[in-house]
Length: 189
Image 1 (cartoon, rainbow, N blue to C red):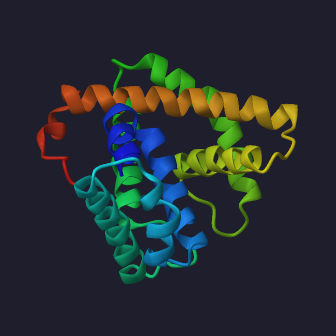
Image 2 (spheres, one colour):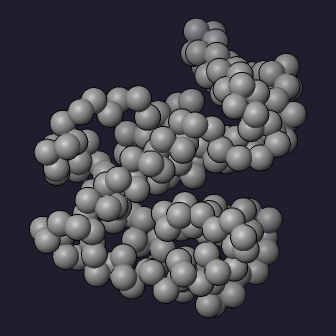
Image 3 (cartoon, rainbow, N blue to C red):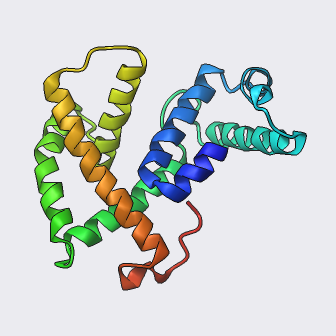
C-alpha cells in the first residue's frame, strides 16, 4: 500500500507494474488473507493502525479480484483504468505538434511493439499494454535469474525509455493539464 501510494504519485508506469506484481503476489498466496497477514503484513515494522490500513488495502484488492473474476489471471479494473488513461494521453501527445520528441520516441519504439504484438498470437494487446507486458515479463525473468538476450535488452531499453517519457508527461499532465479535455477529475485511478 505504501509503495503503491508513493509510486502512484511519482511514476505511473512503476505504479502499474507494481500493481501487476501485487496481483500476482496475492495469487501466489491463493488470496488467503490469513497467510498475507502472517507472511507479509506482520513483518512490517509499523504501528498497529498502519498495519490495519495495510491489511484493509490488501483485503480490498482481494475482494476486487474475486468480484472481477481475476483470481487466476488478468488485471483489476483499477489497473485497466490506468492503461486507458495512459492510452488517452498517448493519443493526445501523438496528435499534438507541441510534442515532436514524444512522437519521435514512439516511432523508434514502434518496431519493437509490432514485433511483440506479432508474437502475441490471436489476442494481441494494445500498443501500451504490449509495452507494459514486455517490461513486466523481463522483470519476472530477471527475478528468476533467467538470461535475457542482447536483442531483448535493446528492445526493453527503448520500450522503457518510451514508457518513462509517457510517465513524465502523465505526471506533468496531472500537475498542470496539458490538454483542455484534462480539466476533468482524474482522481479515480
